Length: 307
View (cartoon, one colour):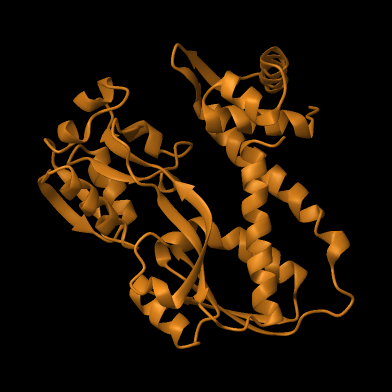
């Protein structure tokens, strides 16, 4: 099989935007050329990556799996570009990194592995804790930098936040649920059904403000800090949930039991970012980690739509 980097970029642009027209504007080529590239990619793979509907392009199960691989390719290309900027004197010292359990499973592994490959002489310690305790450790100087949900910091004046990614919230439904017949269910309709609430990383606080703003008080079946419990309960029809997209894994067995739909109303995204103490002098190892995180974020953004 032969692929080109442009094919990966064009595919990711369509996957992100859900539209050939929007993707063509993102990557600055003609729609016909973009369509041809996607068709050639599907022909090479021997499988459909998109479902074509009047509303646009949606990924198939094969498409979701290929999307994960394509993002790794784009990230690897960005990483290869780092080789020419290395310092002759290797970094040394210690980096204390804070992370919450929810975010750790989705953003930490690749970034940490890349940093350790590039700076093997740096001792890295990872502290996993609840958001409020990580903030306390950051302010006290016990943690250098944290990766966490940054929507509802307890003391935002004491901290610097640099967003890495922003994930839309959608409603998770058991397969065959009545709301799944709607392309974009309304919040008021969702509030008529029992809810499973994920109490982790203050996501529940962000969503509670959303319900309150719309004057809605949905019945809550269960509040849990376990994402797996939410998946299972939604999958068996015990309730529905409103959660950020980065937690959904459609290429796994989730897709057999759980469907997702965008919400009709404008709903705040969940932002994941770097957080460090305001006014602190960033040691070289900390500054290097922050820069590497920025580059990975830019690489993922380029993968979603590179010009």
